[in-house]
Image (cartoon, rainbow, N blue to C red; front, side):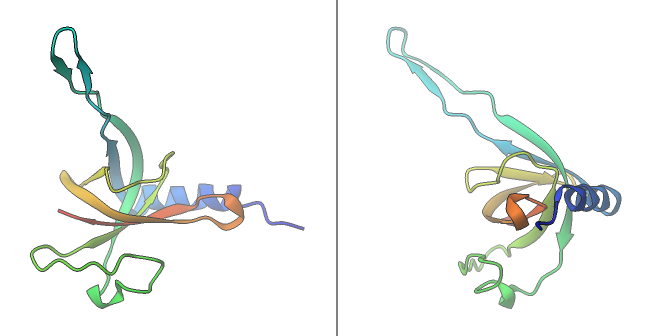
Length: 126
């Protein structure tokens, strides 16, 4: 007998909404070029709403934990967000807006038992 994770997903999203804050994932859309006119038009970015909490973590946790990158940057420190309610998986081209600050995504790892994504652990930096 398999476990139905849909109810657990709903619980996780409710907890993130109650304990966290709204976040917006922004995905850029490619620009288009019209050779006849020479016009370059920027595409409209796609946005996805969700809720997130900022997870306090030790930068020493970065390699080997939950598949996060072991890249280090001396100028800015990476932050870890737990994001729920997103309908797409975050990727490196996306940004995450949380508490009016825009973060560049470094890595995202879903927690997805039974193919149901409960949340994404998102490593990001300013």
